[in-house]
Amino acid sequence: MQFLILQALKATSLEKLVFLHRERDAWATCENEKAPREAAEGELAKECEISAELRQNCSALATEAREAREKVVPLEKRVSNLTQESQEQRAAAEGYKGEVARLEALLTEKDLALNQAQADLSPA
Image 1 (cartoon, rainbow, N blue to C red):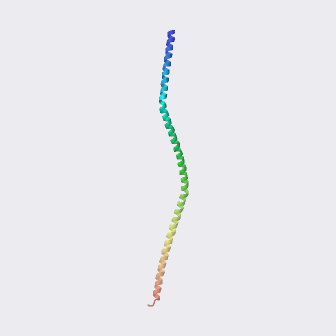
Image 2 (cartoon, rainbow, N blue to C red; image 1 turned 120 degrees about the vertical axis):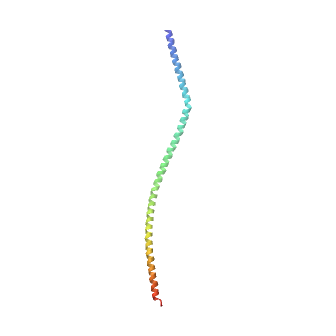
Image 3 (tube, helix red, strand yellow; image 1 turned 180 degrees about the vertical axis):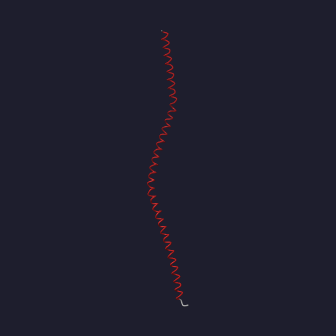
C-alpha cells in the first residue's frame, strides 16, 4: 500500500512538474509576445490618431464644400441673369443695326433726291 501511495505521490508530483513547466512556458511565451504586442498597440494608437485626423479633415472639407456650394448658387443665378441680359442686348443691337441700315438707305435716297433737285435748279 505504501508503494501505491508512493506511486500516487510520484504521479501527482510528475503532474505538478509538467503543469509547472507548461505554466513557465506559457509565461515565457507571454513575455516573448509582450514586445511585439506593445509595438502593435503603439502602431494601432498611431493609426487611431491618423484616423481621427482624417475624420476631422473630412468633416472640415465637407463643411468647406457645403459653404462653397452655397456661394455658387447665387453666382450661377447671376451668370444666368447676365447671360439673358447679354442675349437681350444682342437682339436689341441687331434691331438697331437694321434700323441704322434702313435710315442709311433713306439718307442715301434723300441725298440723291437733293442732288437731283440741285441739278434741276442750277442754271444750265
